[in-house]
Length: 123
Length: 131
Image 1 (cartoon, chains in turn brown, purple):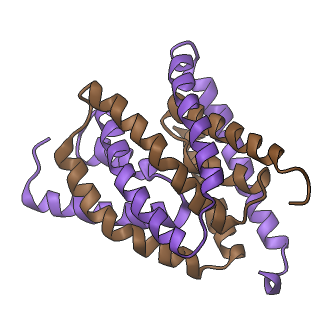
Image 2 (spheres, each protein chain N blue to C red; image 1 turned 135 degrees about the vertical axis):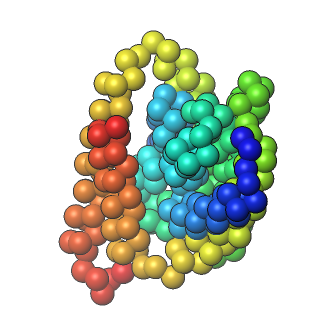
């Protein structure tokens, strides 16, 4: 990026704002909207966008989880069982991503996005 | 929710799949976990969202560590995204009460479908040898 670097930084805050609003409004959001906007507006590579979106999801998810915990809307047994599996799965997913090239990764993510979009329209 | 031992094993297995998807695509995984908790385990929508959000935190953390080791994470951008994201979720939750949910769902659905198709078309136009 040769231009001034402050604009992409402000854009990133804006992308977060949109993603956060959407997840607050629809319960869908976070990564599925941050990734395409990070690629289109902030000009990250597909790989960087996936990894960076995931990093932003940690604090966003934490705040969300605390809100639901205050309302007693968490099943800790189910959460523990899911997390047990997910913690084993995450490094595998990261390894797969690092081995997939930019083009197929874009196509895979595009298919996921289109599928979620259609599912929202049908539901 | 009462879980038999076999169902518990199934939940761990589903969690593994969620972890793979989460790190591979840079998403939380609520997309698959919320319907799973509601439709398969019989939890209500709010309990499913809260439980899913709690699982997302350690899962995404482990995924990020693995990605960061390979140099894929831009922490500067992640910090800015999270700043906007935390503010946005409060905004969204407040506005949600005022808005007609159906209309917004259609707008967001169309947006995602179009972005998805655009991403696929762009990727297909890129010469494969360059990437």
